[in-house]
Amino acid sequence: MGLKTLSEGLSDAIVDYVSSNPSSKANHENASQYLPGGNTRSVLYTSPFPLTFVSANGITLSSADGRTYLDFLGEYTAGLFGHSNERIKKAIQDVVESGWGFGGVGVWEGQLAKRICERFGIEKCRFTNSGTEANLMAIAVAKAILVFGGAYHGSVLAFPSVELQSPLNVPHEFIIGPYNDIKYIQSLQQDPTLTNDLAAILVEQMQGAGGCHAASLEFLRSLGKLADNTNSILIFDEVMTSRLHPGGLQSYHGIKPDMTTLGKYLAGGSSFGCFGGKEEIMRVFDGGRKDGGLVLSHSGTFNNNVISMKAGCVALEILTDDVLVKMNTLGEGMRRELNELCVKYGVQERMWVTGVGSLMALHFGERGEEEGLRDYVKLKNKDAEDLFWFWMVGNGVYLARRGFVALTIEHRKEHVERFLEVVEGFLKTWAHVLQ
Ligand SMILES: Cc1ncc(COP(=O)(O)O)c(C=O)c1O
Image (cartoon, rainbow, N blue to C red; front, side, top):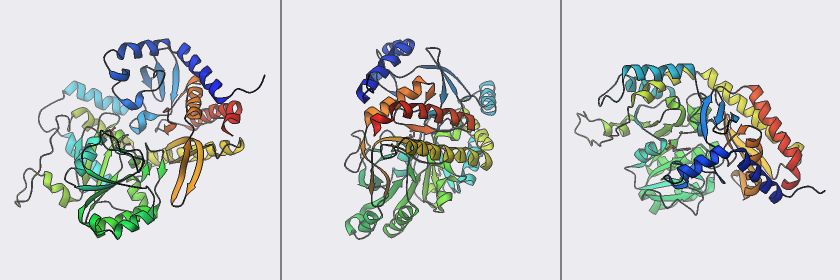
């Protein structure tokens, strides 16, 4: 009998998945009667249906079908502390005991702001409930905004490619440039029409949702220059990347943006967003401003929700530089070993891994090279990506369908070894369909 083809392998994997997860299937069908797509967070949809989880502990997830998974998704980076960190649990329990939803100021928001400002070198900040909202606030008063193809800054700020933005995007005037392309930025410097209108540049130093592609230092520096020359505000979206270095990726790169947006893990896994930066910008939100300057309102019922504020304070105590560096070092090693496995099986031009520290993405397709653009995916092989996901999940390892992996501070070498073992099993069985 000959080796199976990719499409045969994928059909078998789907049949297996459906028969192994009947409760998840039933839950999806029931929820679909009321929630379009059976869920309320589009990224979680996966065909034929997503797994339904009922509990989580450490880095283990338990599904409605009685299966357990090693979690390598880490709640798309928000779950940096794992699922049941004792200190965060205690912080939330304390809030449950002392009450929440004051409709007034609490003690924790000031303390969390202090910790965040000191950690990331931000002068003043405000909180929101999500990273999307943080970005919306950061660009709210800007007219034309330079963003980059492949960027995801939230559900109404999505730019899958230079040619394409989401029809749901907020109606700002967006100029979508190619990521990591210094020549493009230099050409903008010569364009006076743009120079007059450009108010902000919004960029991730590593595009997370866009495939864990890191910007070059030269590219980031060229953005700093463009911002200076056009008198526009440079905003680093560090919603995902702030976990990659103590002080965020901006401190690693040694570039100080005018504003920074944050979110995800910073409230210990509770809903959170934050935007902040220079005092001279943020002072417009000072309702008690005495100098007669502009005052703008930034309200939001849950901006200072006590659970997020208190859990955030504890989260930042837990996340010492040592803990953070250890997590990112583990990720560096994991990515290196994954790429070595791809080389070992001769598929490195068809399967490879990109990322920084504890965040990474596995790519399937044709690896291309373009001047100034590292790790370029020339042609995506969706079927191979899908087959890989079914293989991993079938072997008790959970990650995003698109191959995205986020480690947590609970991950250890033995968990990474298990991940590598399952990937090697995939390569032994399926390398022939990738070559
Ligand atoms: C870089 C980046 N910015 C903003 C967001 C939006 O954050 P939220 O999902 O909390 O709205 C995300 C979410 O994945 C993100 O990755």
